[in-house]
Image (cartoon, rainbow, N blue to C red; front, side, top):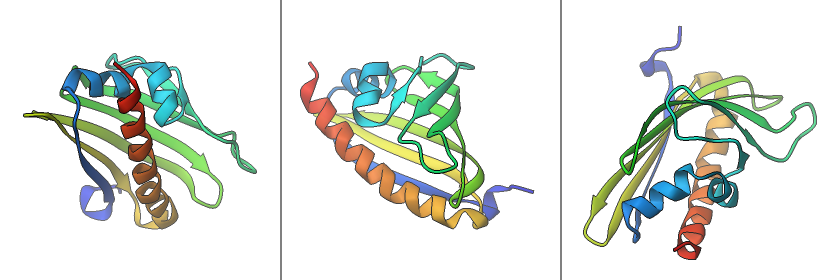
Length: 146
């Protein structure tokens, strides 16, 4: 059984000195997502199935299957994150949630990836590192777009 008490969550919070509309575009437009996260066929529509594509590894094609669970412009974006990566997780099924909280001068952006099971320690540690890296790239991407 997979209940919240048995799982862990990666949380990243950063202030982005950009308007919520600009941050939302970076989170939801395919070419911008590719700049900071991965290649994708994303559309911010609830129920939309999409894939993220990263560098293939031995035994894994680099594909992450996802589904949009919520998309509230400039406020909230939630999607599933499903991957089977040999040696990391045979069946990683987590949920990624971005929450945008507009403030004077920018947005407080919070990302949570929840649902890491105890057996997925390596995936959990990888996500902690990976999201820090992705957020750095997101900040660079935001600095380049109008």
